Image 1: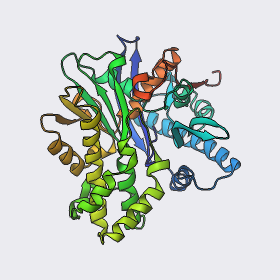
Image 2: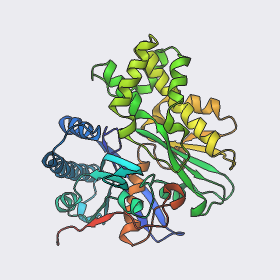
Image 3: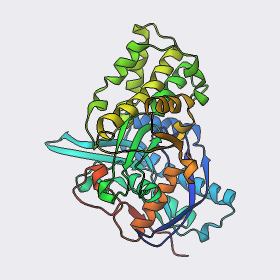
Length: 382
């Protein structure tokens, strides 16, 4: 799994058997592998919709496939697992464009998404059949192609008595709502807005690239609150949209960060003030989404947090303070480490695809019907 922040490649090793509703899945190990810096920079440049030729995009697609294959090989060495004993790889790929809602394009309303990292390269170099490109099949049946992790959230966190919300704090924040005793059709999910992406961009800008994220919210903790900036951030049009909805770097990327920096100048905010505002607005936009779209309809007992932002104490403190009566807990308390869940989820999705079973949740993506997600790249014959 490589998320919208492109800050590394998460690899999870899982043992999976059976079929829903009796699917058996267990996370065995997980690790993270860094991107080569030049590849990360080019990936982010392309994802920010900067100028790129068809040839450059093709080259980056294949080069990333090699990087993902190297990440699998490194993980197998670390886990002391022979690649030939691995049956299947699920590769999310690197999102470089996502337009989940149809917009006019060349005379027709068109939605699209593009994840690169050539799966044929992964399958050939590892010798392991690879499932990739999960999102287009959902868009093809009227969905937004996101979020897809709710299928795994449902399998992992459904509870007969407690309503739960799974919150992932990656580059973008997204939630999966799993009411008590939920059936798949009862589950819904959406992207609430930005999470680490904007905070990381501000940190990289103000440290001139020396640091890429706000470890333990140290910068934000030194900042002062600026209500005017916070109010402006919480008036963002995306936050007002009703689900299903999804977003990404196209909306909350470099241009958004530049507008935020200009907003800080207008309000004479120090760098740490702006980082604090972005951090607190992340938490408050999640709380607002829960109040607006979830808590009026469902009783929720637990908020289960995963992703890199689960290590941000200021976000967690804000969530706990604003959601009295709801237990805010890390996903590791339920057996899945915070930085492993998304990679684990795509292992589950790949398993379902290989067995020709649908794994989108239409109530989460807005799809008209279930879809078998992904494309299979078979390993060369042994």
